[in-house]
Image (cartoon, rainbow over all chains, first blue to last red; front, side, top):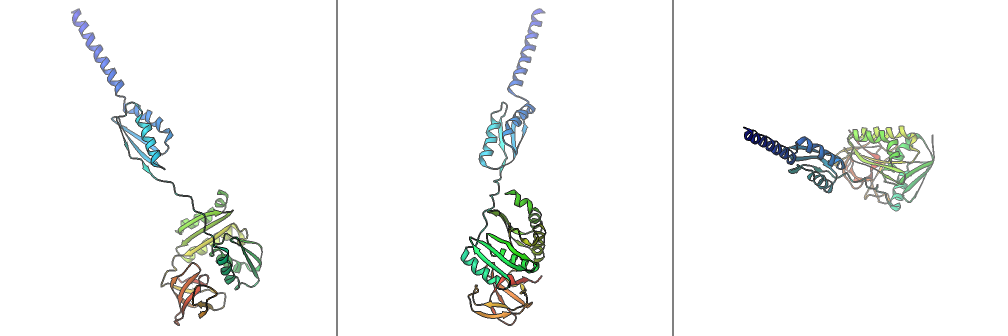
Length: 164
Length: 141
C-alpha cells in the first residue's frame, strides 16, 4: 500500500513536472503576442497576430529593410515557431521636385509679347523673376498675372504695381 | 516650408477637391508654385478667385499658379478672349514669326495641337491656320 502510494505520488509529480516543462517549452499564444508586440515597438505600422506559435506580420512600412527588421525582431522571441511576413513595403512619395523655371531669354521674349497688350505696365526680367511696375485696373492685372504665371517664372514681383 | 502651404491651404485643398490632375505644389526661394490641369475652365476660375481672396490683387508675389484646362484638347473649340483686338495667327510659335492670319475678338476657332503651354496651333472657320498665343484662347464648354 505504501509502495503503491509512493508510486502514485511519483506518477503525479512526474506528470505535473512534465506539464510544467511542456508549459515552459511551449508558451501560450497570448504570451508570445505580448512579447512580440513589445518587440514591434521599434517597427511602427507593423502588427502581429499569433496562432499556435506562428506569428503573422501585417501592416505597411517604408522600406524592405524595415520589413526585414520587423521579422528579425519577432523571430528572437521564445516560442515563435515561424513568422509569416505579410508586411507590405510602400515607399514614401518622393518630395515634390523643384518647380521648372523658364530661362531669362525665352522668358523676356514671352513677357514682352504679353505686356505689349497692357498699356501702362512695365516689366523687367532678371534671374527668372518678372518685376512688374506701373498702374493697372484690378481685373486687367488679374489677366496679366494669369498670363505671366503661365510662363513658369520663378516669381512675379508686383510690389511696384499700383492696382486701381 | 509649411508656412506658405498653410497660408494657401484653402487653394491647394480646392485644387485637389476639384480633381486637378498632375497637381504639383512645390516651393522655390519663398515662392509657392502650383501647377496642374483643371478639368474645366470654371475650376480654373474658381482657383484664381480663391487665390485672389487669400492674397488680394495677387500683390504679395509668393505664388506662381499655372493651371491649364484639360478640355483644351485637339479638336476643341476655342473662343478668342483678347481685350478687344484681333488675335494674330503666326507661321511659327513666337512673336518674331510672320503673321499669316487674324482671328477676331470673341471668334470661335479650332485647336489643332499644342506646341507648348504658350503657343497653340489653331484653325479659323475662314481657313487660316497657324500659331496663336494660348493666353487669349479659352475652351468653349
